[in-house]
Structures are given as C-alpha cells and as structure tokens.
Image: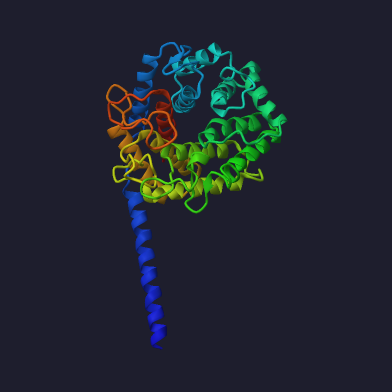
Length: 387
C-alpha cells in the first residue's frame, strides 16, 4: 500500500510539473506581442535601400581579395531575400533591380553553365522566381539553369555538396525546377545528393543525429572539437541547412517519398536550437561553445528566424513553442543589428567556422555585405506573415 501511495505521489508530481510547463508555455505564447507589420516592412525596406543605394549598378563586379562577377553566391543570397521581400512588398524597383542583375549575367550560372559548384549555381534560384513572376512566359530565363541541373542529373556523381552551405545554394533549385516542370527527376537527384551529404561525407555524413545538428564539412567531424571539448556546430552553417530544408519543403510535394524525411530533419534541427538561444535573443557563432567567439551574430540568427517563422506560418511546428523564440530573436536583430541608415551590424564575414571574421561589432563591415541582408530579408518576409 505504501509503495502504491509513493508511486501515485510520484506520478502526481510529474503530472503537476508537466502541466505547469504546459500552462507556462501557453502563457508565454499569449504574452508575446507580434511585431507590427508596418515596422517589419520599414526595417526590411531601410536595410534594402541602404544596399541598393550603395550598389546602383547590379552588374558591377565585386572587388575584394579577388574580383568576382556579381552573380556569386553572396549576391545570390541577397536576391533570394529581395524576391521574398518583393512577394510581401511588390515594388517595381525591386523587380527591375533583379531583372537588371539577371540580364547582365545573361541568366546564366556564375562563369560556367555546366558548373557543379552549388555556390556558382545559387543565382538560379532568383532566375526561377523571376520566370514565375512573369507567368512563365520567358523560357530564356531558366534555359541555363535547367541545362546546368540536367547535366548533374545525367551524371552518376552525387558527392558535390561536401559542405553544408551548399544545401541552401543548390537544393531549392532542384525542387523549384521539379515543381515548375512537373518532372520527378529533379526531386530524385536532390534527395540523392542530400543523403550523400547527410550520411556519407566525412565518413558517416555531416549530420549528427545525436545532437540533431550539422558539422560544416569533414574537417569538423570528430575528433575535432571546440575549445570546451564539444563538437563544432557553426551557427550560419546550420542556418543554411534550416533555410535549405524550409525552401525544399515549400516546393516538394507531400506525396514525394522523401518529404517526411526532410520534414523530420527540419523539425529536429529547429528543436536543437531552442535550448541554446542566448538571453539577448541571438545565437552564438559556435552553437555548443558559447565562449568560443561568443556574442551577437546576425546571419545565423536571421536564418533561424526565417526557418522557424516559415514553419509557424505553414503549420509545420508548434506555434506556442516557437513563436516566443522567433519574436525574441527578431526583436534582437531589429534593436541591435539594423542601424538607422540601414547598415547591418554584428554580421560575421564569409568563412566556415566560428572564428572567421572575428571579432564582430555593431559598426564593423564584413568582407561582403550582401548575404547578411539576404538573410535579414528572408527572416523579415516570414515574420511579416505571422498571425
């Protein structure tokens, strides 16, 4: 009898704790104030206008340590964001800016139509968007994109995405083409390459199912560790995966045999981010070592906001759980990153790990400004849609 009473008391205690957590979660969700839509739009417009003013000629080469054509991956990510902004704020100047950029590159991949490098193909996402915006009336806009991806499909090679950034650069092109053409081959090749990255690169893949996070490339697979002994999970790298999966889910039919795997990977990754959000709303550049260049970092945070807000808007994830997280992160970006003139602070420069581009600062200009803005615009476009 005593054991029964103790058992009942134990379960009553557990039930009480769970109930309390549930009530608190609901209370937190109810107490969260959604950002004002006008303010979200104003922030997005301000940051975008800063960039457009700075780069009036979208075809101008980008000069840094090297000279790059302006359809390189960093600029391609910006145009992904601009297309997202255009969908909620259809200003002709945005459309014209994207058309001018695309025409100056002849609607082609960076440097080589038949490149297999996802960074050089990323510009194709915007070409596909512009093709659809104009009612699919201009096939020349996707001719080279299709030729590039068809050449990859014709090959038996599937190991091209050896770094996780490539998932965001390449996966949405395959799935957009699959949806536009209705041809299953694009969805199939997308999955074939995705699972090679997930399960094979680096020996056993770049995804760690235990932590539900991704190593950037094989050089960060254990035994490599951060200074605190934890695995190295780079914030923006995992942000690219979040964006890749969100954009893949958008265009992949639910009837596709691999849709559920994409969805589960997406949900698992987002769940791994919940307990490691900083008190100020950002995520550290190193997700499991807050002392390794810890501090505010905008790009990874914005990509997480984009992916979470997308999931809330599509009903893919629990709104009560994720909405407070999204709002906290978005408010932090607006408060601490977006400056009065539209400049973005706390942006980590290009690289592959937490130490690159460090130290960050509110007034430090990264080596490329464009991709950080693209991340912000993607996030803002989904925050704007929250209800």
